[in-house]
Length: 506
Image 1 (cartoon, rainbow, N blue to C red):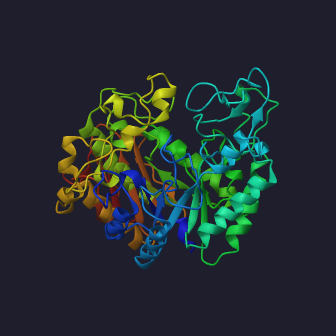
Image 2 (image 1 turned 135 degrees about the horizontal axis):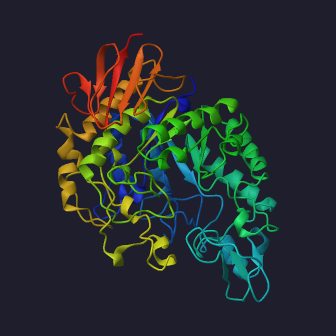
Image 3 (image 1 turned 180 degrees about the vertical axis):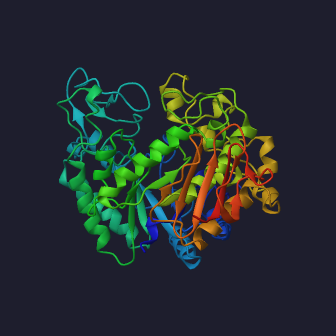
């Protein structure tokens, strides 16, 4: 079986994962030291958010050099050692690639400002921008260069968009792919995968910079590059698309292997909504034979322990519900159940660093320490994404580029490792069983009808997952034993906001 069809993949945000030299910033030395932790956790691969040289105008997604490593994190030699050491532990390495835009410090853009190679980007001469397009970080998507011309940036002004109609841009990125494949990476997570091709004939309301047909030709070309390498190297796309049919086009056999399932991440903790989302996801992936992915949190969204403790448990970029009343005990209970749900569904599952510790969103960061450009671009109305990027607690922690809450001491790796009831122990057992159970990972599922407020499904051979989203305990279906539950059972019944894996008998 293709490893990526049923893998458990752990997202590392390098700046906030593990600090190896005590300067308060995560680095490759820290990550290399923690590889045994990831192996013990039971993941099949790690995905690293960008590790390239960057001025950090957008957390490293403003890349100044695609063939090197940010000196704060380490060196290219260390990156190569990391890949080798991860492979020795059976962990594959997926790195981020950012093809829609670069840093304004990238040599190509600096040349463009001096008048050379401007057509690698989108420049416009004139007294005003050519259209009304808006940046996804707020404000206009056009800024003026020193010579008075305008350039396009769908994100911050420090992130000029590449012109993917230009053959040099296409050749450059294929060469970047080969550079990292030659160093042993197992795949790429493609940032803003839907955004490379633009249609300047259409207004902003039509999203003319998202999901244009021409983008598929690019990924077919990339896939040919990838398939020329030995082993199973993979692409995973980041696309926030409302149309599941168009979403599935990216997953055709000669394009991307998989893509993030953001509909599930945004879905509220409600039985009908969750079931509908699972059905829609499976239906969208079936025609192209691609495995679904299941993800609860990442470096861009409010951590799900916080979301699940609110009256409105959904996620929406337009309203992060910052400082909304939150019951963290309830959110944690639901997060434990969600861990069993996502890892039992067919396909691949992603774990965002700190999720296995039950960390919540840090919503009380001092404003002067916020670094996310969303904070400034929104006129301080949107706190941005720094609250999910606070460095995770290991238990012997020094300084930190964003302050950790005092309460995180009791949720550190050291504090949880010896506690059989901790979130960390639950994740270790979940991922251990997921590897051991032939029913789990890639494959099929069938719903069990246990009432409208219970999500239950079977997977062959002889496995069932039951999640109680009602307000009262429910009886488990006939079974030959409970493999695992997210919380204690109540006289054999499944309490509210609790999930169980059982040996199912028909």
